[in-house]
Length: 186
Image 1 (cartoon, helix red, strand yellow):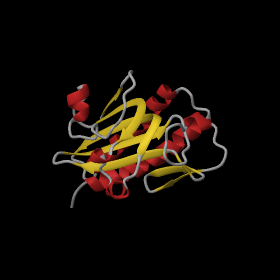
Image 2: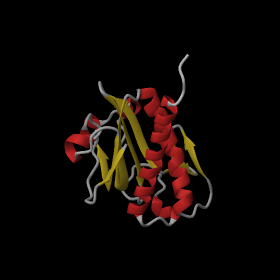
Image 3: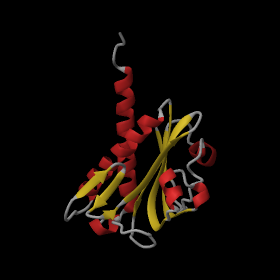
Image 4: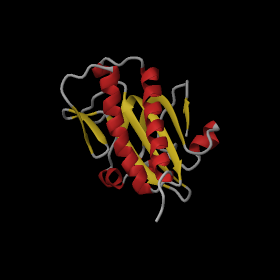
């Protein structure tokens, strides 16, 4: 699994959740994670989540860490499970790098600090791969709901945090794939 961190800020608008985005836009072929920091503003026409579309939700924030994950030979059900595992990884990483007063908890694929939401996430599939967008707030500015952010936990070195998060996700994916190929079939 390949990882790439983009040095320049980029806005996420939902168009990045597309087949071969990591390869066609950034040269990262195969199972991969591409991450960057930037704003988020997903217009209705680029939303994937049916609940958000029906509710005409606003998905926006001034500063987030974004990750687009593309996995081949990985069904949607597995991508949804990985999405939830990424929520647990996020909780562990916040505890490792920051100071948490209170409790971080996961409900589905969402991580909360009390009632304040820390992340957004969606999984989908294409004819050839499964895709995940997983992002979390760097600051609380520009969000339409009550949020938590890395800043709330004293995490200011976002690049180091992003690399640590990507490495933990990569490790889990490789471990999952290894577990699938090391057992005998009957």
